[in-house]
Image (tube, rainbow, N blue to C red; front, side):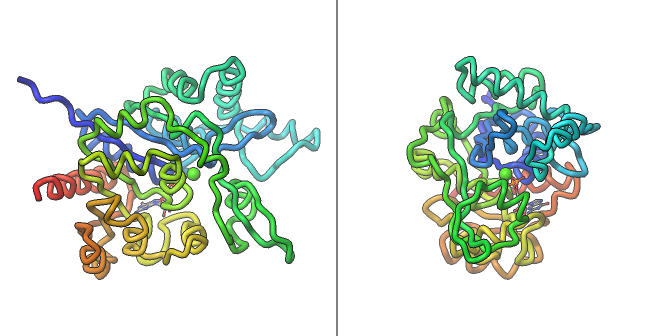
Length: 324
Ligand code: GDP
Ligand code: CA
């Protein structure tokens, strides 16, 4: 009897998630991969629904990503943005290119016609053929807001305003996934988790990517109850995020920017295994003491081969966990 393909579920944000997934596809070409994508970064701009993390995964795995940037489309032009600017219509701080605009127009049109985001995402993936099943964490609206103090005034701003416009330069006092408590997992999410052989947390942002997905009621519990190895990879290398400002949002939830602190933040009730970079070998001990099996391996996704080696290490650690 032929063995069925192993079923892998991955909780993904944008760039870190997408680059890891490309490596995972190379490391496990026969695996049946379901991606649960973060939608807390979603934003309405110019009347359009923009889903940055879903699109980053879709474009990266579908061959349409701007490789150097890690988000947005390759060979992009900005005629629409320039025209909007000529009308004095912003925001200017969020870069939407012409090719990217088409995705958001199609999505918004389908949502307006009554299709849920999960069905819209599936339709967009018909074109991109990402080779994974890409599910939004929820069809319900969830928007991450950040409580900040600007000029002595405390206010909440949309995550994208905090991240892209303010470049996380003002201290974040709280991170709130608005709507998450009322949101339901999208169709297929809980089923995929229950049917998984392995669950992976790529080196995505632990607070505003993976953390937001886990904030949808039912998802964390389903992962903890799945009874299969759950293995994560650290986005923090040498006590700093590899790219971006994850340290700022970790500080907002009271977590140090170290590879071990992130593992303990997830906790042994959720993850069974954790990979840290070789430079963080000193963090293996504290993670293992907390009851999480830990290994130090190279964790820099310099190219797809490097990401594939990381994915293979994560799968090997999952098998070690399963064996005990
Ligand atoms: P975003 O939604 O585009 O911010 O992407 P994710 O949440 O999926 O991933 C962001 C995280 O990926 C950041 O915290 C980075 O530190 C991490 N990251 C990016 N590149 C690498 C890498 O090469 N290695 C590791 N270990 N982490 C990375
Ligand atoms: Ca994101």
